[in-house]
Every structure is written in structure tokens, then in C-alpha cells.
Amino acid sequence: MFDLIGDIHGHCTELAALLRGWGYREQAGAWRHPSRTAVFVGDFLDRGPEIREALRLVRSMIEGGSALAVMGNHELNALAFHHPDPDAPGEFLRRHSARNKQQHEATLAQVPAAELTSHLEFFRALPISLELGGFRVVHACWDEVALAVVEDGLARHGGIDDGFLIEGHNPESLLFAALEILLKGKEIDLPDGSTFLDKDGVERNAARVRWYASPLGQTVATYALPAQRDLPRAPLPAKVLAEARPYAASAPPVYFGHYWLDDPSPAALAPNVFCIDYSVARGGFLCGYRFEEPGRGTFAQIPARGTR
Image (cartoon, rainbow, N blue to C red; front, side):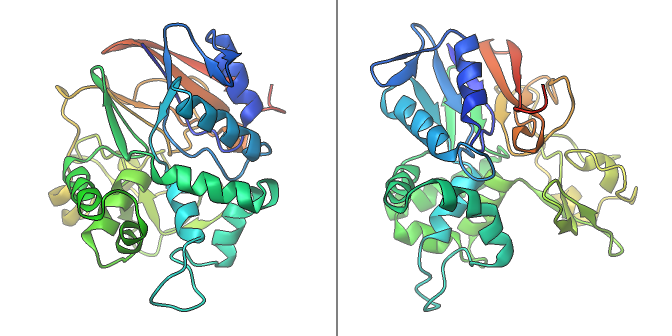
């Protein structure tokens, strides 16, 4: 059986508490359970106070066979932040803008350079998605078309090599669009110059959406994920309606992170759709889900330090 764990973002103390509460113990260099396997949904680094420790813990479990994981957008961002752009001397695939440096600065401050280089190589081996014993895992959005594009890219490049990263960060490529969907989620442009501030205090003119739900009858405000009270209740653009691919009710349960939900009581977003990111890096809690069988399991939550 499996235990799913949401975005960690350098909160190793909370991660250890979650594992301990589930009956995992440190043995032979990694946290282990006698009959269960942990599954991480990505975003191990950035933001938090114990990034080095979190990376070591997660990696030791994966390499020791007691955990699995998918790549999050922060792992992909880190790979691009440290990879030179061959078409722009002195630049990187992820530009070293003030905003991008701020997002990655805690990792740079806490993880020695040589150690981070080793972790970056480890990130390259992470899968983009998993299908395990009747359920699915992806960081932000399960989309069959985008998954097919990424699988083609992985096959052509032989994995996440330099060529894959370069193609995947070319905004004109299908691979770029597919990775954006799977690791960052689908978005909708806000109408009439509307904006809102996200949890990082960044002003945004686009909102993430409930990609798993039908857009019919929805407005910009009601289709956003998480809900944004100040968004306009304008009709959805025709393009959004035409490109929507709701997650089928008959599909296996899917688990993902990424969305910074803030409800104090985690719950399924649909009978077979589960988000397990509840903002541990912004005073929420580290969320987990103990999977028993399709459609049955229990949430767990460890409040971020300082919020107990």
C-alpha cells in the first residue's frame, strides 16, 4: 500500500512527524515502513527552513526503495535555473530575474553547491507521472494529450537530458506547453485587466483552473483553483471551453499537489480527484493521504511549525 505526501518545500521536521505518525522508522539509512511505500508529489525544495535536510530525507527514501516520487515544477525550475541557455550566452534556461532568484534563494543559501549539483542530477531521473495500483500521481494536472507529448519528448531525448531541457524551455515548442500543463496546471487569462496577489505577493493576471471539472456553466471566479473571491464572475472564454478535457468520473483516482489550498479540513475535490498541497510553506500544513484502495483512504495533516 501507499502513503502520498504533498509539497514539502523544505519542511523536514513536519515531514518526519508525518512519517513517524504513519509508522515509518529510520532503518538502514532511510525512513521505512514494513508494508507501505511513500509517494511524493514533488516540490521538495525552495521556500522552507530545512531544504538540505528535506532533500536528503526524500532522496535517501527513493534511492533506498522505500519511496517513489514525481517531478514538481520547482525541481524542473531548479534544473533550468542552473542550465546555461545555448542561444543566449551568459543566460540560463530559467532567467536569473529578481523574482526567479527570490524563489530559489533559500535553496542556494542552505544547500552547498556541490551537493546541489548532485541533487540536480537526481532530479533528472524523476518521472513526470506515475500509475500505481489503481491510482495516478502527477504534480499539477493529469492531461492525456500533454502526457503523450512529454512521453514522446522523453523517448526522443532518452530521458531528461540537456536536449529535453532546452526543448522544454522553448516557449514555441509543444513540449514546453505540455510541461506547463502537467507541472504548473492550466490557467485562464483574467478579463478587463483584472489581477490578484498570490501567496508570494506576486500580482497575477492569470488564474489556475479546476482542470478536472467541466467548465460548462462556470465563471472565471468559480472555475479558479483555489477559489479567488475577488475574481470577476465573467463567462469563460470560448477557447477555455473548447480546450477543456475534464477528468472522467470513471478514471482512476488522481493525486497531485501544487495548488496551495488553504481549507483547514482537506477533502477530495471530486470523488476521484485529490489535491494534497495545503500550503505548509505559508503557515498551512503538510498534507498526506494514506491510500487503502481506490476510493478509500484517509487524509493526514501536520501543521507548519509556529502555527500549532
